Length: 60
Image 1 (cartoon, one colour):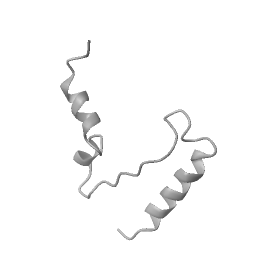
Image 2 (cartoon, helix red, strand yellow):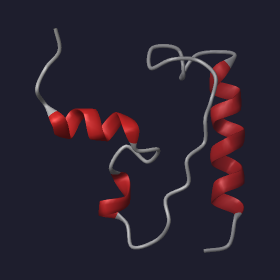
Image 3 (cartoon, rainbow, N blue to C red):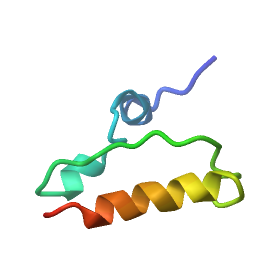
Image 4 (tube, one colour):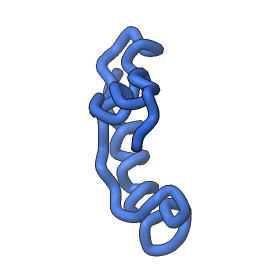
């Protein structure tokens, strides 16, 4: 069995998970280790911080 929620199926197939429709600029996707529950814990939070820092240092 599965749901008939086609919009949710489409969301999981899109690399930006639908965020592009809210941005006038290209959305960057960065794959990070961990899960929803562990991303903000060591050691994954260090990789998250480094990735965010790199993104914020890029010229707009």
